[in-house]
Length: 493
Ligand code: NAD
Image (cartoon, rainbow, N blue to C red; front, side, top):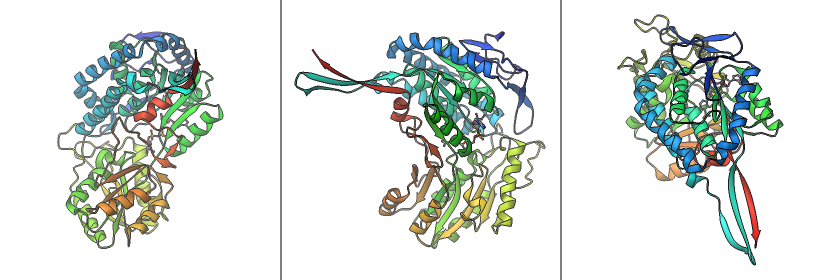
């Protein structure tokens, strides 16, 4: 393996290097994919399709680094993260611009994503306290008992395209702060901005081998899952792949947290503040062009709320400003790729065939000055339920499906006929209705008068049902538990 450069050289290197044992090194194979600006189709760089040999080298580097890193005091380990936090703040605008170019979402959303990532680094800085165990004196006469949390070894992360900065930061800062070492496989669709973050981590003083990055596709994922020296996998992506990763990792006795897709229901009661509700739903459905696992997708108006919320959503959707992510007026950018645009348009077509009424049609959308962009306009479909693919499956695009339910119980039943269980929101001015909903929703992340119920770094993030495979979620206390093993020590002296 040859050393390409001592810098990440993002946006210029072709193809971008892997990061193994503290060095930027070329992937060993010859295959690579273009990383494209989804608004212009300009090629921003190339991502290598690394081989099993590259994975072996990265895991070996991580394994070699583990004993010394584990023995480094927790307070010293997190000093690197404190420095990384400062560097991320210093480079936040630059990172957000890079992210907007390779992902397509607007600058403000990108800035927010980097901020959410930084908050995870900040939370991981608390590891010396968060990782403490418990002690009880005299559990029996003259015998004391204590728990200690220990790191386990080499963890791997496999992450999606829709939050390429934040989602890797849900994982590796906690893994390394707790004393493990890590191999990351970022999404091959937009890996450039995180490349810069890894360079900042190196600048912050992360020792060689503690964090490694191997670019590529499912060959790299599979090699990580199958590698006997990888003790656990953190995965985020579609449910179909999450299921495979969970099955294959668990079959090898590894820890797995696999976060999957979503079909989030937004339920509007007649007593809701309709103006605030419509704003929150428009933001939820069309922000990031619907490519968020917390995006509202099915809008259920209860009783007389239905007509009113439908009219407001149609009005709001028709005023959404679609454009290039770095144009200051843009609210909604393109979707990630041309095949994804075709997929979203295919759902709109299928919905129409299955009986939905197209109130606003985003197919064939054009943006002046950007003829090649992967545009899908804001779309509103009425008469959409779980019996249709468009009401049951994850579209991951700017499409609102509207339906009416007579009661909140009926709305919950509709929601439960869909296999996903990531997030849901209720809009109401009744505390009692909100409490009842929280009690019966059976969905992991619940918004009450909030359209995107995204837990902050100190709370767990992850769904249930087909949206999550595993038991410990990302962020919060779950992250510390996932990356450590508890030992129980009984002592008599
Ligand atoms: P994806 O499943 O296509 O890819 C995710 C990762 O898995 C990528 O790194 C990809 O290279 C890898 N991969 C793809 N096929 C694989 C295979 N057969 N075996 C092993 N690895 C494979 O997902 P995506 O399109 O990048 O991201 C969008 C999806 O992620 C949506 O379904 C979205 O809901 C989900 N998501 C979920 C959450 C959450 O918190 N639950 C958060 C963000 C995104």
